[in-house]
Each structure stands twice: as C-alpha cells, then as structure tokens.
Image (cartoon, rainbow, N blue to C red; front, side, top):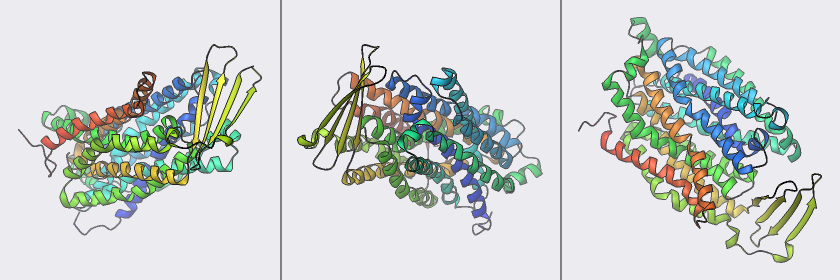
Length: 498
C-alpha cells in the first residue's frame, strides 16, 4: 500500500480492535474475579491454597496459548486471516459464557474446578489464535512506514479489555448488594460477554480478507505447510527464537507485572479493599493507554528496538522501589490509630465457629477490618484483613501503577509491528504467533502464580521485605531478554550476526 493510502483502514482497525478487546475482556474477568472465584470453585477450608489454585487455573489458560498459536496460525496462513479469527472469537465467547454457568464446588464438588480448567484451556487456545490474526490483518492493511502506529491500536485492546472488565465488575457490585454479588452476581460479567461477542461477530463477518494475503493466494504463493516452513527452516527459526528470547519474553513479564500482578499485589498482599483496587487500577489504565499509540508511532520514527529495550530496563531498575512505596503507602504500622474508635466484636456461627471482628480507624482516614475465624471442628484459625484507604493514598497508588503502565506501553506498543516485519507473508501468522504467545502466555501468564508463591513463601519464612520477593521473577526474565535483545536485535529489526 502507498504511504498515503489510509482509506478504509479505520474500519479494519475498529473491527479488529473490537473483537480482540472483547476476547481480552473475556480472558481478564477471570483474573479480576480470582479472589471471589477461589471461594466458588475450590474447597473453602484453605483460602490461600484456593487462591493459588485459582491463579494456577488462570495461568493454565496462558500455557496453552502457544498451542492455539500453532493450530490457528497454521489455519490463518492456509485459509486466511479473516475466517480464522472469527472462529477464535466464537470459541472464546462461548467458553466465557459457560464459566458463568458452572455450579459451585459445594454443589458438584471437584467437577467444578475441572470444568473451569477445561473452559480456561479453550479460552487460551482461542486467544492463541486471535492476536496473531488481528495484528497481521491490521499490519497488512497499513501504509508503508506506518505499521508501528496502526498496529499500536491493536496493542491498546488488551488494556482496554482489562479496563472494561473492571468497570463491568464495579457496576455489577454497585447495582447489587454485596450478598447478592457474592452469591450469584459475580457471574454477570461472564454472561454479559456473549452479547458483545455477538455484535463483534456480525462486524467481522462483513470484513474483507487482507489484501496482502488475498494477493498471495491469488498468485499461489501461500504456504502449504506453515509449521514446517516456520520452524523446520533454520534461518526462519533463528528469527522465531530471537523474537521470543530477545523481545516477547521480557515484554510478557513487564506487561503482567504492570497490570495483573499490581492488581493481585494490592488485593492480597496490601489487603486493599477490592473495589478500591479496581477503581484506582482502572484510572491508571485509562491514563496510560494512549501511550501505546505514542510509542507505536515513535517506533516508526526511531525504530522498535530502543523503545522496547528502554521499557525493560526501566522496569528492571524501578520495580523494587515502586513496590516498596506501594506497600508502605497502606502499611498501618506507619499510621496513627485512633484508639478510642477501635471496636472488637465476637460472635458464634451456627456451626459453632467463633468469628472475631476488629475494626480500627486511623487519623488519615484509613480504616482497618480484621476477621479471625476459629473453627470449632478443626484445630486451626484463619484471618482476613480489608483496608479502606483515603483519597490521598489512592492517588499515590494510581501514580505508581501509572508508571508501571508506561513501562508496559513502551515494550508492548511497538511489538506487533516488530513481529510482523520479521516474517514473510506466507508464514507470518504462524511464525509471529508462537513467540508472542510463548513469551506472553508462558513467561508472562505464569507470573501471578509464581510471584504470589514467592511472596507467600518469603512471608512464612519471616522476611521483613517479603512483599518484594515476587518481583525477582519479572526482573530476572526481563534482564535476560534485555541482554539478548541489545546484542542480537538491530534497530532495523534484523538479526545482528556475530
């Protein structure tokens, strides 16, 4: 396409972005509701184990993404971009809707987590085929020299999907009572997705095939065996491995640290009230999302490499200071308690469990509620803490999360154009999808579970800065990726041969 030919590209952007955004929404509501889901689909007698099991199930959806990339990438390079990511949209939407229909663990026992796991795996397979199709489709419509700018619109969809998932959850919580939301209202965001999927399907149905792929198909130059040509060819395999270990691996951990781990950290480590976390995270995402476009556009001017590598380096250097500031912001040990307003209430449940609730108020407006349950039929107890923070602390956390989102936009904004430009048309869908989904699905998707485990283990060991241990995983992975990327990627997106 010519440099000035942008006619019709906004239709392409809208159709591709809307579908991809909905698929990310579908994927993220599970993570956003992980704390609630852990009490519905897993045994409730060990909340920590149930939460870790939920994160592991969430991660399982990411682990299978590379298989979805291979399966749907092959179809996309053989039959076309359009029909392939229409299929992924329907598979994702159907799986999400059905998760909202699964009975609780109390009703059907271990069948509940099994069904959730199966549907999460189907979601992961669908998402593995979606991104490569959308990014390739947009890039093949984009004018020469503007691929970074136009594909960066696709890059916003993951964050927008997370943002909308948070807003739908908040709206549902505000409409329903807390009891109703906990009982059945948490299912509503899953059910809502089917309506959005239907609308997106109708839009995508009327789209034309990518002109680049249509031309290749007409000329008979498409691949008959994309998997063999992508990974059996040593020259192309070098590019696949470079894309993974020099770019997407680091991009994946930075992405999930700045958004998902930040959310999980505030809810489970800092004990900030769930709705407050959703609100402040939503604001930070809203403020940061335009920078995907900024850095995508900038990558057209100065190259992809230095923007992505700078984002990784900043994350490596500043994650620990940022998370230390986040933790200290709500640490009640640094606040002054209003002793006369402290209350303690003890009650005995029907099953003879003794529940003790302690409420504290601090001079800066922070409130602290701790519930301790002593089980009558077991020789153990469990405690949960909920902290409601003041508006000043909220804005401090918004700023600290916003900084992390900027790191995300730097590594993620240019990545689609970077990957598309690495591979030829006939095997592009397959070749770019695998490193992207291994980097994001495995290295990135496992981050919440691995980092939460590190924090839990460090806390049990009595470390004073236990809350920082979860950061070692993204810091180490991003550091390895930074070194490889700086050595072997040049700013024109070619292998720098030794």
